[in-house]
Length: 198
Image 1 (cartoon, one colour):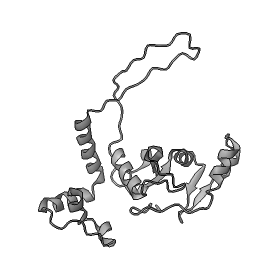
Image 2 (cartoon, one colour):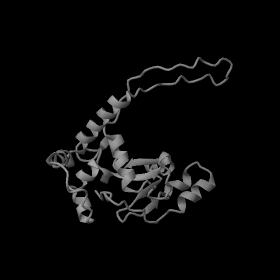
Image 3 (cartoon, one colour):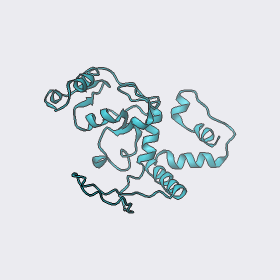
Image 4 (tube, one colour):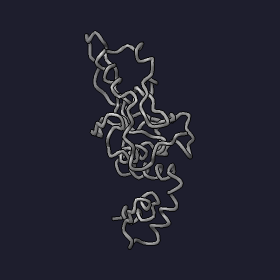
């Protein structure tokens, strides 16, 4: 109900004549205005809340001896990790925008999907690009890696382009042919947050 209260302030929904619930409080409007243009802060606050709720910890496994003569004891070790604040919120928004379907293949299992940054995280502006869903594509894990490696890209008319380097890339022929089947096909467009041409 609270999300429906907030939805009435969303200009993207208003363009589609989706009104949301109209009997929310004044605070709903204040909250929406506070975070509408500051998705980074919203993502940060969401992450803090989730950490407090779930007390998540990260663990590292220990690699094993390849000869398998003596297996190491299975242990867990608490490790400090650098976390991308806002990544989970970015993923949620991107996947929802694409209806939880890969924009190239239509694969619709969320466990196989990735919110792929168009402009890589490491070179994206933290205020305007890192968590901006317009800098995201919903891809399956395989096509996400192919996109990151430059084997595929999306042109400015939203068509898949296969790199000429695919012919020189070490992979089985079936996989190569599968990638080629999407050459020059238009991606499935999101309901919201059309990918930024820039």
